[in-house]
Length: 325
Image 1 (cartoon, one colour):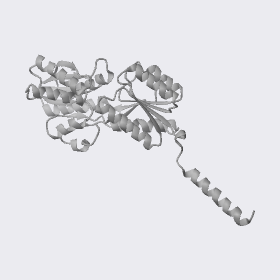
Image 2 (cartoon, helix red, strand yellow):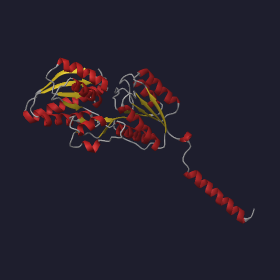
Image 3 (cartoon, one colour):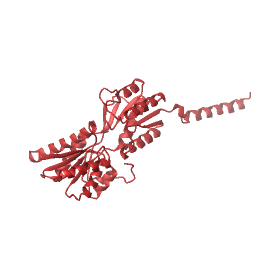
Image 4 (cartoon, one colour):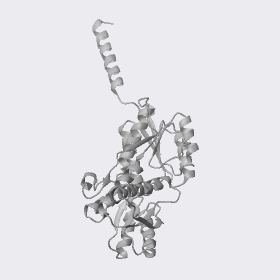
């Protein structure tokens, strides 16, 4: 073999090695990320799913998704299926705080990095972290806004809650109540607040409408609606308009849904708190994938996204008409 041929072959080998070194990994070598949502029948959950998928794909992962359709048994089966397909990260919004404990523990025991989003999970579950907005901090901000806005006026509150026994709903209403109490005490030295009735809206617009219709019939002196999310308050607003009731301030403990923000811009809705599903989902994926690569340490058991009360003074900072949610 001539010296020239040897040089050419050596050059080809180096070029091939360079291509192989810089080429993207084949799909089989990609990290697999599972995303298990308890439901996808509301914009919040759809936005979380789409944002998690986009972030994982952007970070170079293959993504497996599942919608439990509100059924605990189906979500358990979904997680089991993802484990057999070799996921290394599981992003999960649990359908039941206790019922998903064993499934999550099984995933963690298999070496999967489990990140819980939005809903809380029983402390017996062994997961990496829970990513959510701080219901307590958001509640304090909303409560202060209520007192600053309504002044010394006695509060006659119609409370619209998500579902009985849901820990997130309890945290949200407790947070706002604590915020109102502390703000009133600081301002007047006394508390002047009454929950005139509680309705259950199942987190939905239609549920909020029905709950508010019943509350309006039973109570003639409501001056504020407090909902545990925007969707239910939006439904409550329709009931109030149909009943031609005036002087009722609309407040949500969480979310920042774009329809609510648009009404805030128009002066037709009081305030809500920031619970951005896209930010929660992206944060969860980043934490989970870094942990799976061994790049994350000392991860706190709860990872909070920033808190904010959204009203007419700052709504344009958060409003995005093109957002899913």
